[in-house]
Length: 51
Length: 412
Image (cartoon, rainbow over all chains, first blue to last red; front, side, top):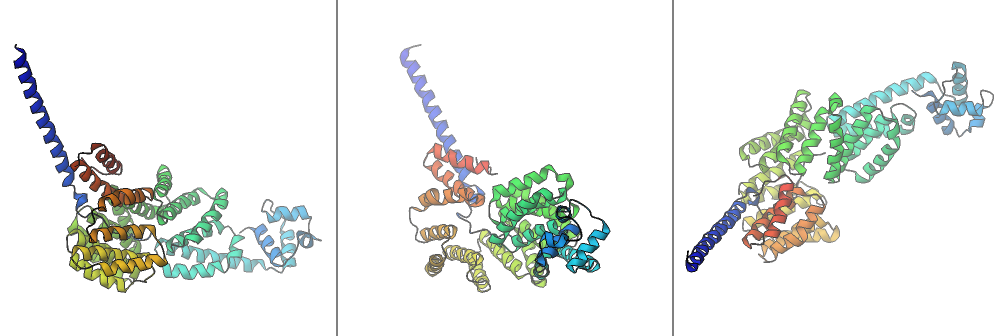
């Protein structure tokens, strides 16, 4: 195989790989963003019944 | 009843030396052994000693019976959270403290005094009593040792030292088969309460259900309401809003009917938390204003209500400046780091300052983590995970994510 062809295949593989990684990162961000604990940014002090 | 202790008690009451009392009856070393209960003397020696002290034995026996009955009532009131009766009996028993010290009731009495101070949230007295019990621990029976651990767990819980409290309960777990039957409910309740403080909601619900069943079976209605309040808070945090709302309604009605004013206020406060979770901030704001009117202004509860009111005001678009100023005025008189942190937070949120997140990370997260406020520190950690993931700062995001998950979370 010619060297230029090998370089072209390697470049293509790199592009695909980088795209997949970006997608993975995005998925991770989305998962954390919908976490129910974020419904209220900060709770007020807790008042429990007597110990 | 320890005859030796009774003799010693009356000898000191009469300002007599051992030499004076023993004179003509027995030797000093003999009397010394009698007083330390390490020797049972002959009946005639007892009679001679008591008559020299002017003590009538049958009256001593009657007093012992009465003290035993009063202590039994004190214990019963403690189990049923009958605070009014407990206060009355505490005063009566305390006036005869010296006499109790001469009897075999002393360990039980000292243990339940510890329990009483914890209920009253009297930190200095509870601490003194803990030290006293540590001196007595060598003479505790197996059930008394068990009880001491249970009360110690409640003591640390009162001080918000949740890890220590958990340590005490874990020691009890090892002897779970030997729970004194009437304390089964208390054990489940303490566990449920602690687990909710540690934000372990599923475990907490399990124990709160057990506690509620036990209290119901034994007609222990006030403690039942306490267990139900734990359940309602639990349902709120787990987004089981319908169940939580139903339970809050029942609790408010029953607390009112049974005259449990403090419990009624605690229930209202937590019910308002549910309203906030469902986005009903304006209703929450109105109810908080009413609740505030019923509380003593110098209490921590009052401050918590004020903070909650600030949050409700901000979320409903109402100006919270006056409320924040009110909290600041309190803090000047009585500094409280936790309240100040909350206040700063809401102030920053109110004015949309850009440094809010850095305040959360630099000040709030370390404070909550250090002081064992698991729910609060987890909430901030979750926020920081989201932020650092967006910034693609993976190391920091991982740090907060692992903190969250280590504390019973499940953040991806």
